[in-house]
Amino acid sequence: MTPLLELTGVSRRFGALTAVDDVHLAVPAGARHALIGPNGAGKSTLFKLVAGSMPVSAGTVALDGEDVTGVSEPGRARRGVAQTLQHSSLFLTQSVAQNVLLAAQRRHGSRTSLVPRRQRAARERVAELLTDVGLADRSDVPVASLSHGERRQLEVAVALACEPRLLLLDEPAAGMSPAESRRLVDLLRALPGEVTVVIVEHDLDVVFALATSVTVLHLGAVLLTGTPDQVRASPAVQDAYLGAGREALFTDTAGGGRRAGGA
Image 1 (tube, one colour):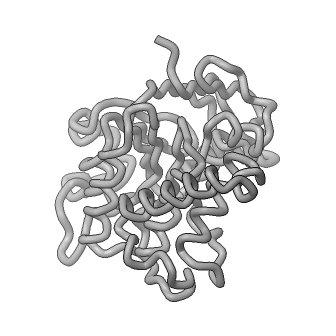
Image 2: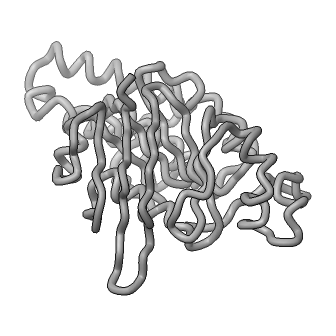
C-alpha cells in the first residue's frame, strides 16, 4: 500500500551545517506518527520540508504517491496538508468562530461567503469543530481573551477546517496544563481514519498516549522508527537523550509530564 507521506533521502543543508541528513520515512494513511529527539535533532526543520515552507537540499517528498518536492506550501495545502506551528498565527482581534470560518472559506474559496446555503454549512462545520476541541462556549470571544492552552486548541480547529489528509502538529501541547493535554490527545485520537497525523512533541506522555509509531531523530538523522514500546526499550534512544542517565527518560517527573529535547 502506498504511504500517505513518504520521504526518500531527504536532506537540508545550511552551508556546512546539515540540519536534516538523508531521512527515509514512510507514514501510512491513518497513522498517528510522532517525531521526537534531543535538542538540535532537526525535527522542526523536517516539518518545514514536509509542509513545503522550506526547500529540500536533496531527496524527495511524496504525498499519496505524488512527488510534491517542487510544490509550494500553498500547493501542498491544496493537496490536503495542514499544519499548526510553534508560534500562533491566529487573528487575535477576531472571534474564535471567525478564525475557524476564515480557514473554512479559504479551503472552499470565497464563494462560500456569497452563497447562503454554503455559508450555513460552513457555520455548522465551525460549530462542530469548536465543540470537538472544547471551545463551543468560547465561539464569540476574541482570540486575545483565550488562555494559551485554548489558543492551541483553536489552532487545531483551524487546521481541521482545511479538511486535511495530512495534519502536521508542531508542539501542540506546549504550555498546556495536564488536563488540556489529555483533552488534546482525546481529540486527536477521535479524528477520522482518513486524517493522518504527524506530531512533533516534547511531552512524552502525549507522544506515547497518542502515537501508533514513533521516529527518533538525532543529529538530523533517523536513529530509530518503531512502535512506542520499541522506542521505550531502545538503549540507543535512551543514550541519545540522557547518556548515562538514560533510565530517567521514561520516568514521570514530579509536577508534570516527561519532556523530550527541543527542535
